[in-house]
Image (cartoon, rainbow, N blue to C red; front, side):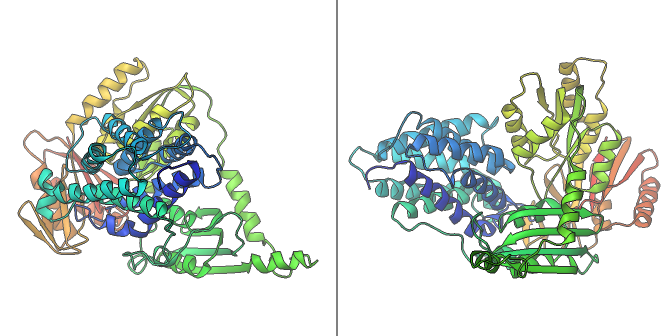
Length: 567
């Protein structure tokens, strides 16, 4: 093949995204830190899925029009640093195709070079040994070898060949990769995208696999296929009671919703405390139910074959004998309609914060946040989530607190995508919940937007952040050996404590965080800690450090037993 047109490029993008989907658990497993939020593969997968949905029904013959639409979908769906960088690579790629109907190998190379340029500009402090290195070195290698007579197949062979070599070199550029014995996860994900695009060029378009390479614990991931809008499948409705704790997995609403959305259509989901009501059209209802049952037990299930209903209608029947939308669905839609918030009156200022636990979200509301974006360590919100929150805030000046280093880029990208010229968006680069709390308290409605931004950014430096979670694999870091399920204490992104007991880990971590100048400990306890336990822990901290005040919050966050801020 010598030329790529718009429809070929469309198939390449979709095939690339599907190939990444088939391997994203493997990409997640490359996470350097042995913590339960290794989500590079998931973030890149959801980002690519958003781009693919944007182009799946487009019939453009122009490569530029397809690339531009794909880029727009990526930008809106970008999650995590890896997803944002991926979106920027293809944003630059689309800019390199501006005005073009079709391209040859040279045009492909030029567009990739533009992708590298835009991606590097999007990162404030580019780090080598990452996805940036892989795309730069592989694109540069192709640029040096390409010529007008080269086939597209050959161009991709060269691109992928050098990308794999570049990936092998990432541990030499980033010492932490070498210490843990892995290559860069983002770079590995990019190669899966390139390989899927190459397969499409050869006429072997990758479909989403019926069995991903890892993640056997998630039946829907391991056996689910996506569903197109025009497929009938099964109308699946269920009422799930979450828990009990200890025997069921922790429910993360954002992740649950995203997984279901990628395996069906017409999703309606409503949560009321420990009850979750779901309506979805899917080709594989059993996979949906197996996935949901990890988080609770069913109180009601209804499955109707919409294909049979369709056949019944075609044969002159009413279709009601096969499927009738019941009162539960109507009730769910009424609740969903009631939950749509009326537009907030225009305000001079608004604060938006990211929170993963109901207790943290409530606390942010109490101290003046107007919008809460659900997410955190275990599920990063997309740029589109931030854009929607900014619209709902309806303010002249909006401050976003990402509260996670892996969310800052998505928030910043959203700030650039806001179309309201009367709204200014400031991203306060908070990397932890304690930083977000301390920084937001500095907000003063009596001073200018710029002065507020300066003060809140300065406040970030006054907080030492820590967290206690569990290890997901055996490894060794910073001279500390840890086994799977050991509790680990992390201070400012370094693992400094390891123990079989979460409380022991907490107190060891605190001993490293608190010094003579410390005056306040903010302790946010997770959903696995009772109020009685929390009270006992506060008493122990006060006993050990009598000159330090303790500010306790029942955060109810998943995965992280304790989030700590020391000032």
